Length: 212
Image (cartoon, rainbow, N blue to C red; front, side, top):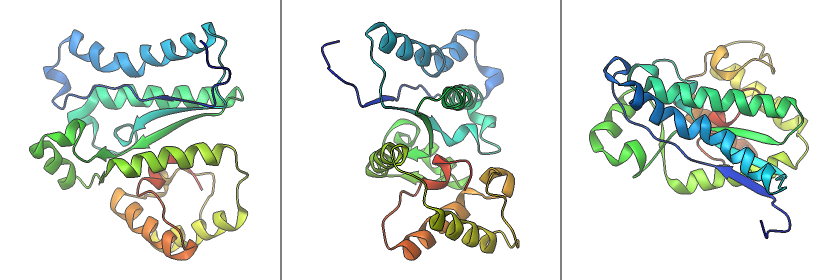
C-alpha cells in the first residue's frame, strides 16, 4: 500500500496435477481451480482495496486451455485457465489493459520437473521453453500494451500464415486455432518471423495472442 504507482501486476499462481479427471475428488478439483479462479478475484480485490489500478495486468494462463486433447490428462487445469482467459477478455472489454498469456510448459519446473511427464508433453507436440523465454514474453506483452499495432507486421504475419496453412487468404480476426495452426507449425512460424523481422521473438508468440 506504500507504492505510489503500480505499473504492472502479474498474476502467476497455479497448481497442476496431471491425471484423469474421473479419478479426482471434489477437493482435488477445487484445489486446482482455486488459484486461477478465486485467486484472480482476490488479486483484483486486493488491488482495489489499496486503491491500486495497474497500467497493465498480466495473467499467466496456459496453452492447456486452447490446445485440443490437453483436457484428457489436465481437465481441471485446462478449465481453470479457460476461466482466466475469459476473465481477461471481459476485463479488456471493459477497457482495462488486462492480458492473459497462454504459456507452454516451462523447462525444469512445474510439470516438466518430472521427466516422464515432460516426455509425454513432447510426444503430444507441446513446446517446452526455458524460463528466460517466459520472462521475455511477459516483458514483450507489457511493451505491446503501450505500443500501437504495426500494420506492416500484420501483413507479413498474414502472408506467412497463408503459406504455412496452404490457403490464399487469412481472416485476421479468426483465432489461430480455428485456422488450423498446430503447436509445431507455430514454432516454425516464429523462426520464420525472426528471419523476416531480424529480431528475436519468444517461441510462445502464437500462444500469447489469439489472432493476427
